Image 1: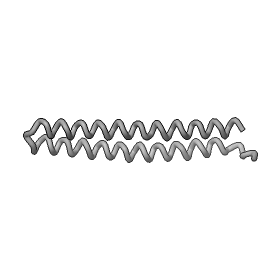
Image 2 (image 1 turned 90 degrees about the vertical axis):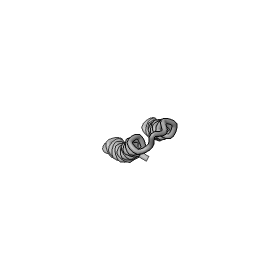
Image 3 (image 1 turned 120 degrees about the horizontal axis):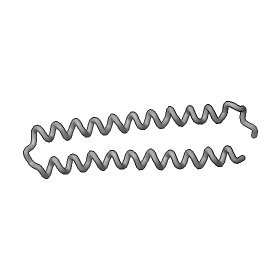
Image 4 (image 1 turned 30 degrees about the horizontal axis):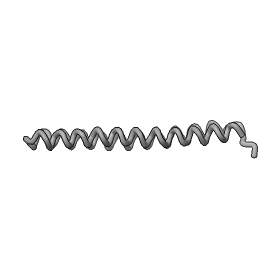
Length: 85
């Protein structure tokens, strides 16, 4: 099936909006984690608890980045297959 000329532009726009929205949500989650670590830092004297909270914050950021990369690679592969048809 032949797509109209604007089909790739629409696909790019849709992906751009979807990834921007997911990135925005991940940034909000990171900021929330950062706020929690600052609250814990000011209210708890235990260094161990503070280190655990900071480690969890970094783990969330890394997991979010991995999820975005997996989704992006999958979409790039689908788009390349569609354009090669």
